[in-house]
Image 1 (cartoon, helix red, strand yellow):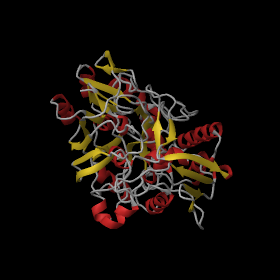
Image 2 (cartoon, helix red, strand yellow):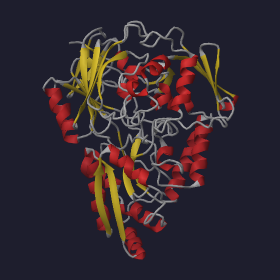
Image 3 (cartoon, one colour):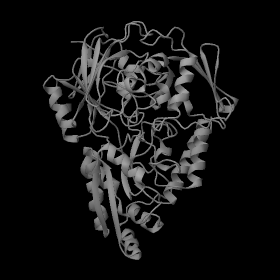
Image 4 (cartoon, helix red, strand yellow):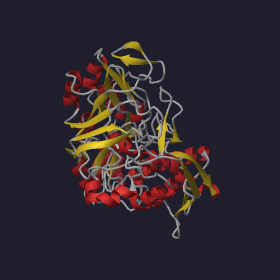
Amino acid sequence: MRTKTQRIAVLLAALLGVAACSSTQSASTGGSSAAVESPRRGGEITVLEDAGFSGAWPTGLDPATNTTGGANLPQMSSIYGGLFALTANDDGSNAKVEPNQAESYELLDGGKTLKIKIREGIKFTDGTALDAEAVKFNFERDLKSNCSCAPRWPLVEKDPITIEGTDTVVIKFTQPNAAVINGFPVSNVNWIASPTALKQLGEDKFRVTPVGAGPFKVVSNKMSSELVLQRNPDYFKPGLPYLDKITFKAIGGDQAAFQALLAGQAQAYEGMSTVPLLEQAQNNDRLVVTLQPPTSPYVVQLNTKTAPFDNEKARQAIYYATDFDAIAKGLFKEAYPVSQSFTAPGGLFYNQTVPGYRTYDLAKAKQLVQELGGLKVELGTLSSYVAKQVMTALQTQWQQAGIQVTITDHQLSTLVEQFNSGKWQAMLQTAGAWDPAAGVGVAFRFQSTSPFSGVKDPKVDELMSKGASSIDATEREQIYNELGKYISDKAYAPFGLAFAPANVAVKGVYGPGLTTKIPPLVVNSAVLWDKVWRSQ
């Protein structure tokens, strides 16, 4: 089974945005503000997902075998719901992870024991109970997955996962795991599958027609093409979901999605990154554009395990040759902040600058390249509009310093293969998450054991472990500041623009995370699909 994902780079741009979704709310539609009525039941929508990212689910939708689970948040959360969910005010403030199918949780023993109490009476769509036994079964199965959406919990050896009664699951860690709850919404352990259906169907059939306890159930599934879902009449939240039907369709990029929305062939698109199209959408009275708060800044990952970046002078040359401020100004009119670390304004523990960070200095870059006797670099990224624009700009800047640069953009599957091969040199990716210790956070890009890391440094591993372990928020921020400075001092990876995804919906469609702001867990926001509705 192939390791998965990068919720990498696909980020985007566009100013404006935000519609609300409460009993009264306002929607930003191409510069005008319009009041909308209360949510109503009924109707259906088609949601477009980029075939290069969230619109690809080649290994199916079983939480334990879906190797692109982190990218497939829309499909997975619609079918399974989730034990926990990230919520926020309509403007993106006060973001927090809250129990959903879980009723409550406790962190005990200084963060070394987690107790999760499951809500009573929740049923899978096959009629069986979502209880502690089902959750334990899923946890044990999911943790064995090769998917990068599977958490790497530091579990005790003997009886790490147990149950108390019918409604409580107990997890024991070898060390404090304070960030464990914040990691749930983007982890496969959040999506609880029916053990009965899995055993009856077998893994091959279950991954095509999975059974969960979420707001919708599967009608049909054409892998990486079209997923048709209908309302779960026995959903545990009274009155929800609002919609009778959702169809998720893969589409070949932003231009095709934009045209489909205008043609009435779909009602929403997640993750538009093409800036000119976003500007057009903002000026179209039929569309609502919502720019989400950024949580994952771009980073130039340098593979320090192989030449040329096993030489710190080569890494320093890249730092001095890189001018993200100029890219932000020239390409994006300074609409997006430049970060010097792995945090961004929409996430926790954000600090924009790092003491001693090596900023652009062309003379120093040229001197280092000369001392190295020349420098040749292969730079890659995910095939998305913004990523390719930034990569091309970096190529130009580095060439001015005398660096020979070859650039390549990859589809997600080939990008993963490049990382797994270990033969890559430099990659423009995103680094960070809403919580640096959660999901595809800083460990994904910098931990020694991650296949998507170019760094093998015990000090980095130690600081990341401390940051994830501490139950004190102030201490965690101090640790992450120290980690950001250490990465900078060692010239491991220059950071750049902090983008966030934009969602585009037709006027009359509303929902949390779709037309309101919820900080992205990784790249795209986790839309609360049970609360999405349409007025016409």
